[in-house]
Amino acid sequence: MITHKMKAISNLRFDYMNTPERRALDLAPLGLPAVPMLGYCNYRNPRPDVPEHWHPDCLEIHTCVRNTLTFGCNGRTYRVGPGDVFVNFPGERHTVSEHPKGLILYWLILRVDPPDNAFLQLPTAEARALRLALLNLPHRHFRGTDRIRRLFQMLHTVYDEPDNTLRPLRLRIALLDLLLEITVAASAHTVPPGETRIEALLREIQAHPENNYPVDELARRAGMTPAHFTTRFRMLAGLPPRQFLIDCRIRAARELLQTTSLPVTDIAMRLGFCSSQHFANLFKRHTGITPRACRQGHSGPLRASDSDDGQSVNVERRTQNAELRSENV
Image 1: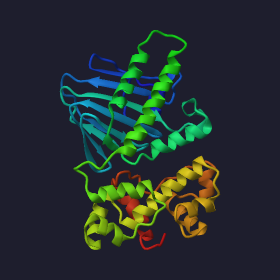
Image 2 (image 1 turned 60 degrees about the vertical axis):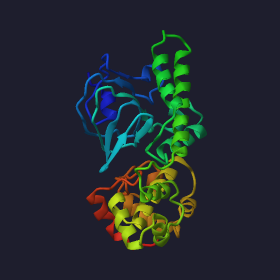
Image 3 (image 1 turned 90 degrees about the vertical axis):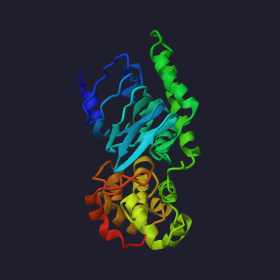
Image 4 (image 1 turned 60 degrees about the horizontal axis):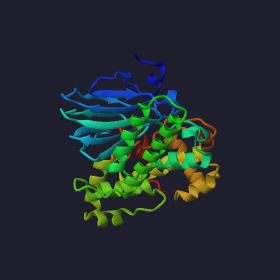
């Protein structure tokens, strides 16, 4: 059965079908509307691929317990093995393939669109801090911890308990504990052997867009000539280094405009723009709206990169942003 709520969190038609090999739970009736789906699978037979889909305003968090599966996201492929955590960010198009026999996987879908004062029933400042931490995880694919697996398991265990007045509270505490543990594990992550130095630099730029990144210095750190580095960087990120930095700054600015009361000038200076006017011009060119309109709640079509971990942007966005490549930040 497809509910209206499920249509709101995914473009892919799916339901809460439960079988001996798979379960999908809605935690909203137990006081956690931020978790429209908590899932677990233990496949005894291979399963078909999941076609490209996305979840507006939702994070999708997975931890693999046994065997390996493959995620495709924005032109990149990720092999997620036992102990790994993989995160899809809001609105990102992704696929899942190679569901092998013996795969054990936990996952949840987390709404991150509610106002701060409604997010997981936390005080406003704490809700804002947690949402920002989750939306700005320094890595989407990282080594998890045994505690992450146990907390996922705890959520299922508490859900299965007989109904009692403390069950919703225990679920919320376990969920908060899990989300905090994920932020810690993502920050402690070291670049896995399969990643390149450029991918590590992409993550650094995204995590700290307020810093300056001269191409010569980035190339030196990558062990390449500036020309070779720029070519390789563009192949991975879909944009040259300076434009990628601008896109990261615009995304960070949009988040600050929507979640804080900082003056526009302070946001511009904090993120390394040379002036508030220059920032306002770039912001409107990237998003289609002014910083003031963004603060007033107008979303606008974000034209900046949807990238995380250096994933590519589509041709249309690159074309729209081409004129900015020569501008100084």
